[in-house]
Length: 440
Image 1 (cartoon, rainbow, N blue to C red):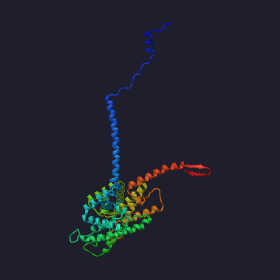
Image 2: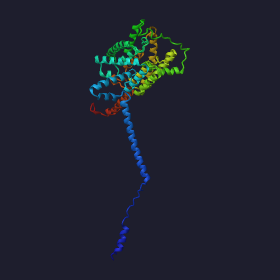
Image 3: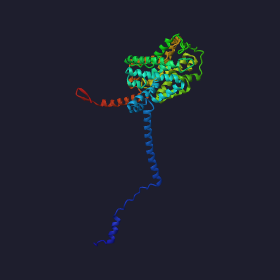
Image 4: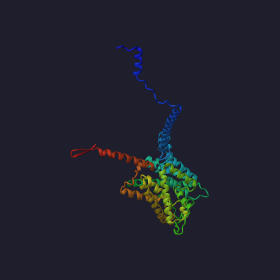
């Protein structure tokens, strides 16, 4: 057999050698590459913007809204001497919000501005009352946190402001220096009453609230009696007269004004600018508290309409401010907010208006106001009633853990989440060993 020639071998090699695979991947065009780059850049920018929004939201919650803990942390980082001064000013600002269950520095600034716009002299006397209450608290060894958040000093502010606001001008002069003495004296008395009530009521887990202010002002007004002095008029309040509910009619503007101006009775500011600033201050601290206070004001106004109060008294908001405070305290402050506590808060607000009407007839004939007594009585009844038989529908917030409604709800939901996550683990950890059950 003849051997193959060289040319035939080369031809046979070419036929048997596999052909190389061609790269069929399409080459991306310039427009597609640019589109991909823009998409990835947009995705990165959206992630960055979302991270920035999250950081901004955390900063706002830490320094602006709620109880603004970042401000307290910044004050504590200062030098010793400067920190003492700043801590006092922080306490002053938080005191203004303590009247309506707000513990926020920026809200305190708005409350202070609202009071200054209405009456500068009563606000300055109120600031003096805060200083006196702060000094008494230090002498009586009140815990620093109670002084710092304004809980131990706001009654002193209210009493001193009340003394200035209800005094007639002395020889035509509104800025009467003689008012310093009664403001100082009754601020000390209200602070001592606050400390005494707290030592008693803490055993039954009840807050003193505005009761020291109510006791002090009632003693102050009752001591005046029929004695007419150039500083304090004898007849500060008219005798109560309810209108005939069958003939009484109310305009929509009067009802709306009653709801809007109810907060003015807490701070003694009856002008539109001050009332707007007060509502904004509550909203900055806690939108949930703002909502509950608004519901309480509407509830109190509705009950007052049913009772047939005079239209001019309804429009001042005096029949609904206690309902406002009760609804805010029960629906989110002393209890974790949920649909059940919200309904309970509205019911309590209606009851507070009924108590206000009762005290109106009892104290009115002797020209004494009921002040914030309906707030204390209503909260005491509901807090004690729910404490007697604990219900899983109403979760009480411990006094040491009270901050603001949104925080209470978040903390409660986190506890429930941890509890639900631990429940399956504990059930799976039950291991049988003979007649004994060992829990892992």
